[in-house]
Image (cartoon, rainbow, N blue to C red; front, side, top):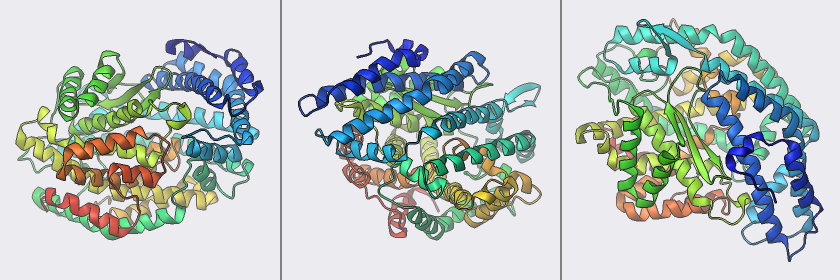
Length: 563
C-alpha cells in the first residue's frame, strides 16, 4: 500500500495513485480478508484526503498565490476525475460483495447513496464548480478599503462597528458596503455560472432538482426538506419574537428610534453595539496571546482537550490572523494522514474571534476523538452532529472566559454570545429558506435580480427589527456575502439544528459539567458509526426540528439573557 509523508502528498499525481487503486480493485475480496482490504483502502483514502486538504489550504491562506492555484487546478483537471472513478469502483466492489464488517453498517449505507448518485459525466462539472469556488474566494479576499490612511480588509474594518461613536460606525459601514457592492456584477456573473453547473449536475444524476441531488449527497437520512420548512416556521414562531425583544432592549438602551445596520456589531444581522457606557470587548492584543489564553481555557476544561490544543500550537496548525489575500471565514480542515486538524480563521482582536476559535477547536477535538476508529470510512460524522461538537464547545468552555476577561466582562461576553446565538437562528432560517427557494425555482433562482427580491422578502419575515431604508441594495445583496450559498450549497441548516443540540448539551452541563463533558466526548468518538438521533442522544440531547423543542431550548438560555 502507498506510503508517503504527509507533506509529500501535495505533489502526488494520478500516476502515483493509480497502481494502488488498481491493486485494491483486482484483489479478491472475501470474509477472510475484508478487514485487511478495508485497512489498506483506509490508508489510501487518508493519503488522498490529505492531498486534497493541503491543496485547498494552500489556496485559502493566500488567495494571491498563483502557484498554489495552478497546482489545485492541475489536480482538478488531471487527477480528480480519475480519482473519483476509482473510488466509485471500490465502493461498488465492497457493496457487491455483500460483506459487512463490524461497525461498517452506516458507512456502507453512505456508500450506497454515493454510488447511486455517481455519474462520470459529472466529474468535469464538479471540478469546474470547485474552480468557481476559488473565484469567489479571490473576489472576497481582495476586498479592501482605505481607512485612516491604511489599506485594511473588510473584516478588520468591522472592528469599528463595535465602537460607541455612531457616526464613525456609519462611516465605516458605508465604506465597507460600497466596496462590497462594487463586486455586485462579478458575483452575479459567478452565480449564474454556479447555477448552470448545478442544474446540469442534478440532471446528469437523474434527480428532479439540485436539492434532491444535495440531499442524497449530504446523506440526509433523518429529515426531509419539508422538515426544514417546519423548522423555519418554528423559528418564526418561537425565536423571532425573542430576537425582536433582544433588538428592542438594545434600541432602548442606545436611545434610538430605530436600529440601523451600523448599530449591529457585524453590520447586518448580529448583536447590537453597547450604548457607550461599556467599551468594546478586546480579548487579546496579538495572536500569540490569543493562543495562550485559549490554551488556558482548555487546560481547565479537560486535560485531554488541553493536550489536543497544545499539539495544534506546537505543530503550527493554527492560522488565525486576518490579512490581505486570505480567504474569508474560518474552518477546521482534517489532515487524516497526519492525524491532525488544521484551524483557519480571520482574527482581528474581537470577542467573535474567541468564539470562533472555541468553535473550530470543537471540530478539531472531534477529529482527534474519532480517529481511533479502525477504518477511515467510519470517521465521517453527520455534519448536523459535527456542528454540535463545535457549538457545544463554545458553551462548555464558557465558565472559563475569565482567561480573557475580568469576571464582570466574562459574564457580559457570555450573555452577548447567547444573544448572538438567539439572533443567529432567524438568520439561519433566511439562508436555508433562500436556498430551498432557489433550487425549487431554478429559473428564477438563476436570475440575480429575482434572488435579490427573494432575499429581501425573507429578511423582512425573519429579521424585521432592523431598518435598512435607503440601503435597499445592500440589504437585497446580502446573499452575496454568505459564502455557504455560493460554495457549500445547502450546508447551513446544520448550524441551526446543531445549535439546538449544543444548548441541550450545555443544559446538562449546568447540572453536572463533568458528566456532560464525558457524554459529549463519547458522542464525538462514535464518528459515523451511529445515526444522527443516536449521536444526539449519546451527547445528552434530542434531535428535532419542532417548536416544542425550540421552546425547551430557549428556556435553558432565558435566565442568562437579562430580558
